[in-house]
Amino acid sequence: MISFHHIAIQTRDLDNCLAWYRDYFGVEEKWTLDEFSPLTLSRLPGITRLTEVRVGDVRLHLFERADLVYDPVAERAAQFQHVCVATESPQELSVRRDRWIEVFESKNYAFARPDQPTEIVVDDEGIQSFYLFDVNGLEFEFTYVPVD
Ligand SMILES: [Fe+2]
Image (cartoon, rainbow, N blue to C red; front, top):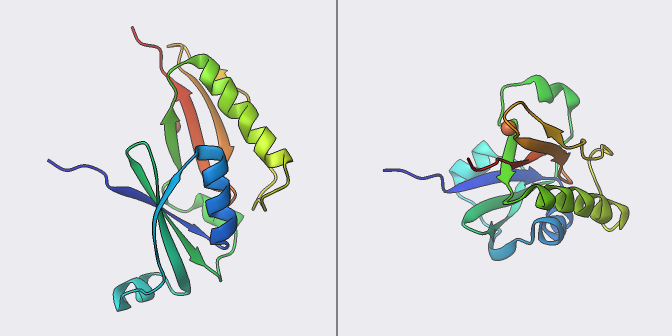
């Protein structure tokens, strides 16, 4: 039996990233590392700091690489494309969407891209979703799946 342990997110600016994840996702900071093994340094050149945060039972490893660039071409490369978060009600979807806009408009954070969240769409099975970007330009989906 295995289980997923964490999702790793690389950022150019850990302070900005951490502050946004705290503000928007309500994450709790667990620990920070600033010394890395030769393996980590060879896999992730330029890594300076890594902080583990948790929201519910999900861990995120946020780490800074100062030389990171946002590259729209890379969006076509094979990669983890988005992470999806489920809500317990359709109302919560709207709340999460409005909250993203509020946090964006606070101008407290630097965003890699200016895109606003999508509208909430409903598919044939009644599943509702919208998509947003974090400060690094990584995509998240929020979804509400009705219980039958
Ligand atoms: Fe999805």
